[in-house]
Length: 135
Image (tube, rainbow, N blue to C red; front, side, top):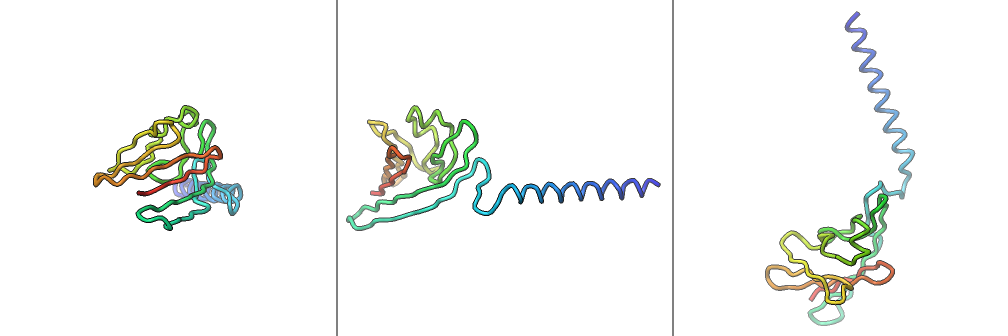
């Protein structure tokens, strides 16, 4: 009798897990992003200028309430909307772990300085498209 109860409980749990997975897969149709995630849509590089590469990146994000598309650890991410409103870009932690972050004087973006002195400058346009210059 006890073994029968355990078998029914395991069967019920398995059916429940299967239904949750089925519902989740139906909600996340192809092309939809999970809440709080981002993906890179386009990435263009221009190396026509000596010692300088200009990269333009467009990302698509499905941010949760109170968040907006931003950059964390040099990758697109959902960040607190207040950071973008106040233009306190370094609060997003946009640079890699070993890099230092500094705001540009006019708050139009930030710089990430590597230990060897190489500087990456990122500026934000009005349409939230980020332009990153390496030089």
